[in-house]
Image (cartoon, rainbow, N blue to C red):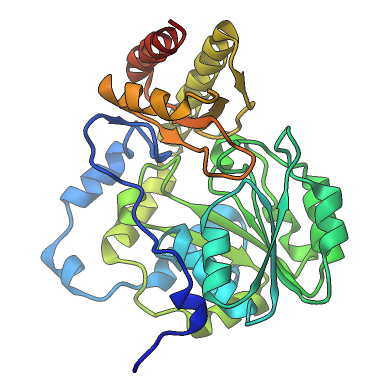
Length: 352
């Protein structure tokens, strides 16, 4: 009888986190501001020929390379960040190799490692949920082939120090060190300038967050040209669709839209922080477009109560170290008025 590889058969099914859209969706860290009007105008102008022809990914890679200040040979465009992770992990991880990361973090890391039959080495962050740098350095071994670090981190929103990340890259020259910068626009700290001095370092970006293009699926993986060339051997030639490539130039050109959106998110983060302080709830200082807050034993009821009020938030209790925590994406200023009121009402209801 036909059977899959054991590492696949033993995986838990990967389901979409979307369970209906019956409210304001603040559970998936999407942009509530949408995308740039210039992107929308470009979408409306697409011709039949642009849709019917295969996409030219290399054109987009040259645009991205120029924007980021790296060589085109250092850039690989992917179908969202998820494909970038899949390509990198598949290129460097084999059965018995070690994937190293610290919990809590992005849930795709362990799933991909397990699918490839790698040994998944999970370290637990302390109560502050900061990256356990000393423990990571101590756990690097000759079998370590990939080290994955989200910076800023999801679901905590915390940022690790650049010097600490470079220590990790230097301590593991035979491992691919991925710094996942999906939320970089909201914090402004990047390791892109360090690529030239660290050939094992990869920096990943996405257009799903600050640019509001989650539905078009565009990820960016950067690294040493030689290493990126290995990923190209495995990357499908038409993995990125023509629609997002047609919109890319306008998305990059409209940095005013991105800056305005980031500024509004930062203001929204502060409003959430002030409310949580007022309510006596512990939260983590975020450098992303969301905030993680500890609700406690009533976290599940909190999520359900917010849904009844028309606001969808994410129960993060399943993430190691995040028991009783809820992750809330920052909405637009007008949306946040209603969100803050819903949080007040829900907390008051739980304390009666």
